[in-house]
Length: 270
Ligand code: PRP
Image 1: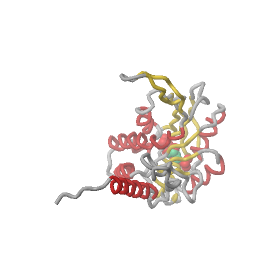
Image 2: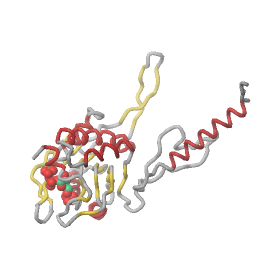
Image 3: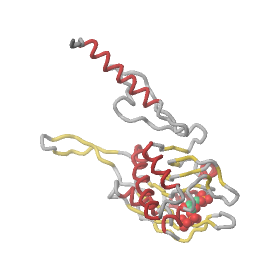
């Protein structure tokens, strides 16, 4: 026998579906504590104003105020393959770019937009576009592996380069190259480097970018550790660190554990 639903029952069912969806979004924080959505309660149609029908909003990590974890399942999956020690350089490079591209979706959430009049095939409308393309600043060498993945989404982005290597004995950063676009301070700047270990390299890179007058700066990494986050918080509390994973700690040689090895070497087969 066919069961017919009244309009009221149908509406109730839809509301339930929204409720369930909002709950799922609120609970998407994951074990890494990446932060749940800001749930503002139902609006006039039984939906949460902020999260219903759109995406969740990120929040800073509960223990690290400068950390914004982007731990989407697809990113976690690709990161696991990338970490695996048998993964060859060609796959490592490809995955580095893919993960950076996927992270860009969240990293660019705060980018400003401005109105623009466009003509669809149907009519004229007021749409929005990004106000300013970002500047990417990869930290050489490993940061280069992330750059193409982000550039694929921001084709108009400018790219500056900063060469920093760690002294193998002291783990202190040594800068050997710097070339930034002249107007780097116009628009957001993304310093990209797969690893935040002691935090020395990222802090130095941000020092250089700030010297140009830029203030809207984020650091985009794959794996970070509490030691590096604390160093960044001390040196640049105004800078957000986006990462795909918060790892356990540094070992006695200042390598991230469990980490992914030396990203520069793995990326370029050295
Ligand atoms: C790695 C990594 C970061 C830095 C992180 O680079 O790519 O730049 O170490 O360490 P920190 O947070 O303690 O400064 P590395 O010095 O190995 O240079 P490479 O990319 O040329 O291999």
